[in-house]
Length: 346
Image 1 (cartoon, rainbow, N blue to C red):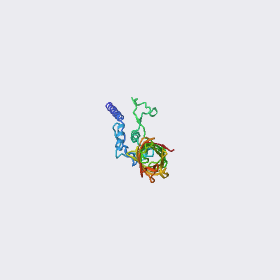
Image 2: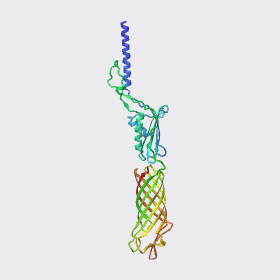
Image 3: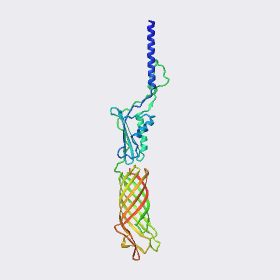
């Protein structure tokens, strides 16, 4: 009987030791990040400098110490869609479990030309989804057990997945696409053939701008020195123009091209008594076209270079003592460079 009892006690001790070892090994194993499927869609309107899917995966794997949490056949999925608005670019992130239920969503954004910054913010939220924060148990979570020996350190508990939200996360308010921006511009350059000599040309303008189209007004002032006379005189031209323009982004949302049509009313003046305009042609009506390129130095400041070609239906002439000194050609032109400052209408 004693031998049987002794063998039974030894068997129980071996069973308890085996269970303790198995529990210790299970506790010592690091937590694994369960796989997800990544659906990444930059969208047709996204800037060309937005990173691709491989960059997002590599950046997230770096934060997870080399572990790639994405597989093509994972039952759970995370979708990332890039949406370009009038003022910025947004990343719409949505996570679904194996049953197709939404378990998390978020919208992050950056300036329209900072797609690199948007990618870093997207990776931050992806890590929070695939590898939730691990929290140690609180005192209320630990149930005292007098029969079990005290543990040297409690095992970390993984935070349970968040329940599906009762309603989608509120998106930031978006400006109406029909609401324009106001843009103030100032530029300087040179004008040809609007006066007998090459003239210094200054321009200021005010425009209402939509994503692709704009309308506005501009004022011009051209000043030419040293006319071809024996007198030291100068010619001036002041004009007011109405413009309609089309704008297209180049390479990224930070660079753009513009094409415009305009008409202006100009006044020609000469600061000498003997020189005058023939047939009272002080007022001149011109039609023109503009081609330009620009670059946004910041969200509120742009640099623009443009060239104008002007058609003059009525050709004014300068007259000295009854003799025509100079007649305006049919075509004129100007090249200017300047700054553009846009303002949002709230």
